[in-house]
Image (cartoon, rainbow, N blue to C red; front, top):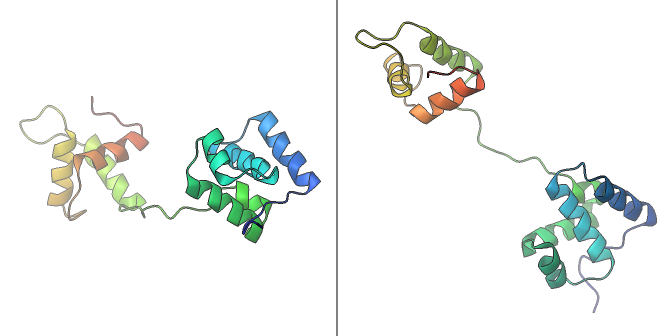
Amino acid sequence: MKRKNAVRLKVKEKELLRQLLSRGKERARKLTRCRILLLADEGKKDARIIESLRVARNTVRQVRQRYVREGLKAAINEHPRSGAPNKFSGRQKAKITAIACSEPPEGRSRWTLRLIADKIVELEFADSISYKTVERILKKTNLSLT
């Protein structure tokens, strides 16, 4: 039976994959993809690859498909991920940082993350914001409230 996405590596491709594996300086996912391709080229079935590398069936399938359709580089490298867009612009983040650096509200000795979040909504910089989001923004500026 002929495989739908049979992997037939060229000699130079095998050398490149082995070189990447021996150096070990790449991301783990990339090295796993290299191993998948080498095992697939040896004629190993997906079940055997899954068992020996402890990866998901879909991972093996996608690596095979990418190699057949797009070539070696596409098969071993990360594809861009969509990710969620930033909810706050650089200007908004600067305003949040400015609030944290300003004088705390009357009767308080310092700002808390929840107070900053409330102030942001009060000043209408955002419709809503969690104190955890405030924490992440301030953390990226190396600003600590403690």
